[in-house]
Length: 285
Image 1 (tube, rainbow, N blue to C red):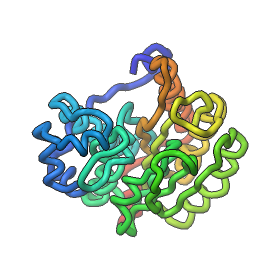
Image 2: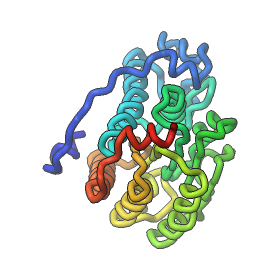
Image 3: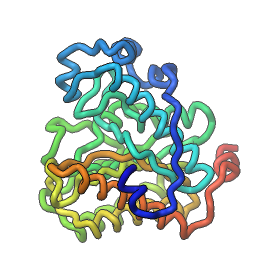
Image 4: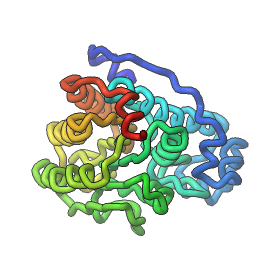
């Protein structure tokens, strides 16, 4: 948020309400949700998550999950909105994993459909790591499609099965990555016919990322984000992004990559007419 504010771009900030417990329990094991709420997550699960689940973390993850829901609501009004946190795509049914406690993408998608804001949701995951938790949590859902672009040899070692996985070789550069996007994203969008897109916009495919194995430049990340948003918006689909991964020794540099990503998406959205709930309602009816 500091990097976004420093950019001078016109940014409207919204503070989310915490995701209600009921909606977390619709996707995650209620016993695990209770462990998180009480900050009593077993050590084995905390090791899998990668950090202790303190009362502060328990409160934070409820709000970051609420943030993805709020971003989707704002996208329905404005075409695009971003959650400046979350993208927690490794969290599973009864445990967190890979720095993820609750899976905001799966939770938000489930709630959007259950409350009638969408019939079919496409989750596009461009983090360098496969969205294994999201794939697992939505595996039986015909109304949610998971599309993951990730480094084939990166974490997790044992991959889940997304509705479509695009596993990229080490060192894939801007041209190779964009070619994969252009091959798969339009075709999936046309065939699945979603009425809302959730986008996990991790910046860890960057060539300087500490945990990435791909080789995108700053320009390549911007082109990726513009393409994903453009494919949704030119079809009149609202799209909401979540932060996702990004790792390095200088947190400011990583933060600037995230900010640049959100600004590139917002700029692309500004070239299209606004989305509206009326279009989604018409599609549902």
